[in-house]
Length: 567
Image (cartoon, rainbow, N blue to C red; front, side, top):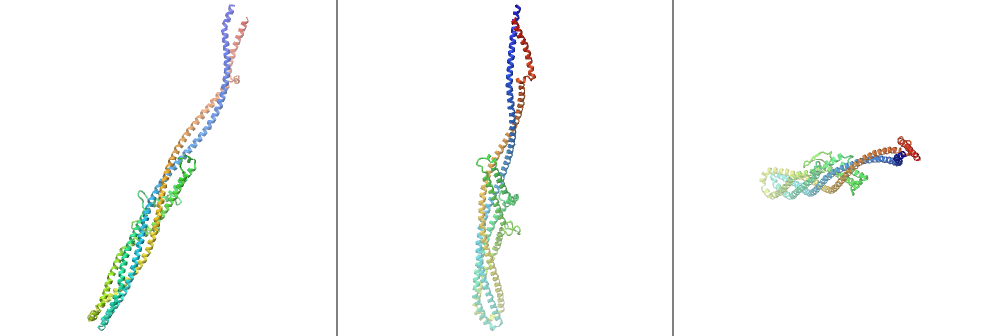
C-alpha cells in the first residue's frame, strides 16, 4: 500500500508535464498551420505585386529614356534657337550701322543737292544775263563793222583825191573840193560807227558781268555736286569705307545679284516665321509678335535693297560711263567723262577761262568806243579845213606825196578794222548762240537739280524711317535673345532632370527585380510549409517524425496510468 501510494504521487507530475507538452505541441502545430497559410497567401500576393511593379518599372524606364532623349533634343533645339537669336542680333547690329551710314550719306546728299540746285539757279540767271550782253555785243559789232566799211570807202575816196592832187596842180582845187566833200561824207557816215562802238562797249561790259555770274553759279553747282559725290564715295567720319564701297562689299557678299544685308534680313525673317509656327513660340514672353517682327524684317530688307540701288544709280550718273576716258576735276577727284561731275566741272572751268578773257574783250570794245568819236572829230576837222586846203593847194601839192602815203595807210587800216569788226561780229554771234545753248542747258540743269533735291529729300526721309525701324528691331532682337537664353537654360535643366529620372528609374527597375526575385523565393519557401506540402516536404517530415515518436511514449504513459488506476 505504501509502495503504491508512493508510486502514484511520483508519476503524477510526469503525467501533467507530458499532457501539457502534448497540448503545447498540438497548439504549436495548429498555429504553425495557420501562420504558414497566411504567409503563403501574402507571399503570393507580394510576388504578383512585385511582378507588376517590375513591369511598371520597366515601362517607366523606357518612358524616362524617351523623355531624356526628347529633353536632349529640346536642349539642342534651344541651343540652335539661341545661336540663331545671337546671329540675328549681330545681323541687326550690322544693318543698324549700315542704316546709320546710309542716313548720314542721305543727309549729305540732300545738302549737296540743295546747294547744287541753288548754284544751278544762279547759273541759269547768269546765262540769261550773258546771253543778253552777248546779243548787245553782236549788234554793236555789226554796227561797228558797217561803219568800218564806210570808213574804208571814205579812205579810198580820200586816197584817190590825194592822188589827183599829186597828179596835177590844175586839178588841185577840184581835188580839194572832192576831199572836202569826202571828209564831210566821212564825218556824217561815221555816226553809226560811233553809236555802234558805244553799244559794243556797253554790250561787252554786260557780257563780262554775265560771264562772271555764270562762273560763280557754275562754281556753286560744281561744289554742290562734289559734296554729293563725296557723300557717296568718301568715307564718313568713323567709317572705314565709303557708302559706295560698303554697298559694293554688301553686293559682293550677297548671292544672285542681291546684297548680303537684305539676304540676311530675309533669312532672319524666315527664321522668325518658322519659330513663330513652332511650339517653342509658347515659351516666349507674352506680347512677343514674331510674325510681325518677321514682316518688319522683310520690309526692311526690301527698303534697304531699294535705297542701295538708288544710291548706286545716282553715283553712276555722277561718275559717268566707266568705258569713257578718265577726267581729273578741279577738286582732284578722278571720274569718267560723260557724267554730271565731269559736265559741271568742265562748264565751271570753261566759264573761268572765258571770265579771264572777258575783261580784255571789254577793254578792246571800250578802246574802239573811245577812238571812234576821235576819228569822227578828225573827219570834221578835215572837212572844215577844206577851204584852207584850196587856198593852200600849192603847199598841199608839195605834201601830196606824204598825204597819199598816209591815206594808203589809212585805207589799209580801215579795211583791217573792217575785217576785224566782221570777225568780232561773227565771234559775237557764235558767243550768242553758245550762250543761248548754255542758258537752255543751265535751266535744264536747274530742273534736274531740283528733282535731285526732291529725290534726296525723300531718300533722307526713307533713311530716317529705316533708322527708326532698325532701332525697334534691335530692341526686339535683344528681347528675343533674352527669351532664347532663358529657354536654353530651362531646356538644359529639363535635360538634366530627365537624366536623373532615367537613372532613378533604372535603379527602381533593378530594385523591383530584386524584390520580385525575393518574393518568388519567399513564396516557394512558404508554400512548402502549407498542409498540402507538408507530406511531400522532407523538412516537415523531419519535424513530424520526432513529434510522432514523442506521442508514442506519451500514449504509453497514458495507457500505463490507466492500468495503474484500475489496480
